[in-house]
Image (tube, rainbow, N blue to C red; front, side, top):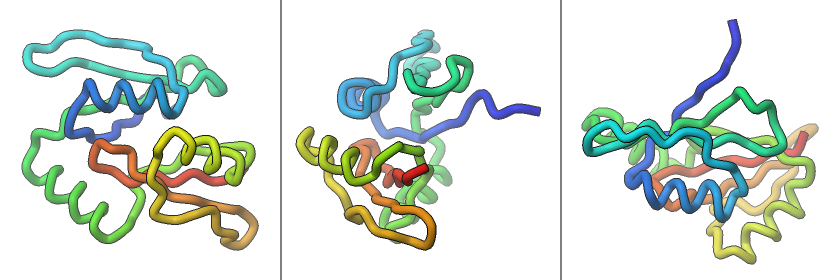
Length: 127
């Protein structure tokens, strides 16, 4: 059993694609029209080519409630590994990314949390 696909619920797929590719540096993998929405995935150029992140339209009312509750509670939806949290934080801030938690040492690692502009808080952590 392997993890090959994970989802991030987004309130606007086009905005999400711009943010995840132009700001975070992911690359578009799939863009398959499915009526009003699309099967839209991105991948990390630094990771395994077969692991994708689905930018999934958040149209299911219970999922919207869950996403909003996580955001309002300050809880990240998911986390991405980086080599240097401080450097990544500085780079993303220069791109206009808003952080709700600046780099913070938590036990053996350092974490930071930012708003992905698509309804989610995302944590980055230092490997």
